[in-house]
Amino acid sequence: MTKTVAQVMTQNPITVTPQTPLSEAVKIIAEKKISGLPVVNEQGKLVGIISETDLMWQETGVEPPPYIMILDSVIYLQNPARYEKEVHKALGQTVGEVMSDKPISVKETQPLKEAAHLMHEKKIRRLPVVDENNTKVIGILTQGDIIRTMAQE
Image (tube, helix red, strand yellow):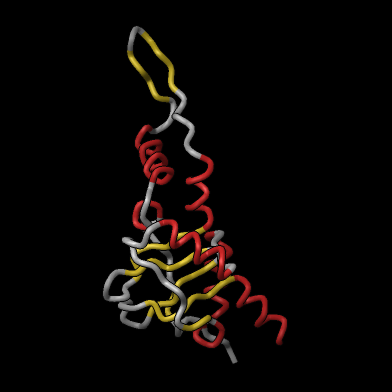
């Protein structure tokens, strides 16, 4: 029998909102020894995800994009809009300012194999699990959940 995401996921995951102070999210991630958190709005709908990678901007800061000067004109060699986004992440004070706002999620009825393939393909460590109507986060599936399932077989 094919296992579904619902059979393996962690139910009722800890979530934060875009308004949650960044310091609170950092504390949750550190204390619970998890690598990221789903970000939900007031109705519980998934709006983003905050991960250790997003938080690293706080410590590493931002390198300005390379540019050259020609006759008093600045020509950027990389997209300056990307630099602005990186500055925003490095200086952010709330989860909403730092989170990734295009989260990938799965439904609880999806086959586990499909979810594992998606995680591998997108190089992500966790997938929020949403209900069939995509209105509420009901779980989270991590690489660890999948590995533990493999060990039990």
